[in-house]
Image (cartoon, rainbow, N blue to C red; front, side, top):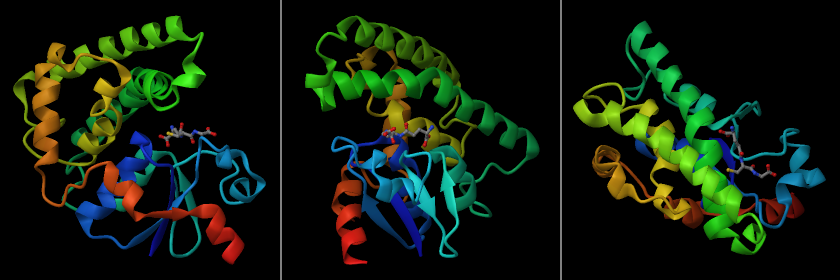
Length: 216
Ligand SMILES: N[C@@H](CCC(=O)N[C@@H](CS)C(=O)NCC(=O)O)C(=O)O
């Protein structure tokens, strides 16, 4: 049984979550509340010294950080893995793109613009700049998806999951998705894949990490 440390609403936490759901892998979700600063707590740092979520702990007690690295572990040997060396290289290419050109901009624009707007007061110029940078990344993605159903062709897999995590909440970052029709269509295709669960399901499955600590 895997243990996933996660915070509600996080696109990064959603990636390993939906992968385990779609592959029928058993797991528990422990909620680490970022808004309450629990990622900075001593109790959590004892588990993940990097103090970030998601964090995945295997049955043997080995921890894995970085959402996209988790996908490579969880999907190993499954139909969600890219099947050739070239596709694996392209998968990594898009995962690095996601972490450098999309997630660093969609995530803070959404967090300060929507999830915790009180923290965004005085940061309006930053939020606009993040939206612009995210839109530039989404334009690249939109062109890529103009002639293929999924990120690597006609087959859904971990590359789609990695990109979907934040791209599917771009509208919550204040980005108009009508400008990216191919991305919008791909989001709907991903939602139709077998065993797909929405981001809100992460909340339903989670139990508080600190309560678990106190019970231990
Ligand atoms: N590159 C990391 C990013 C992890 C990350 O930024 N996590 C955020 C939540 S989405 C977090 O833990 N923020 C709270 C903190 O850093 O204290 C990944 O893909 O897993």
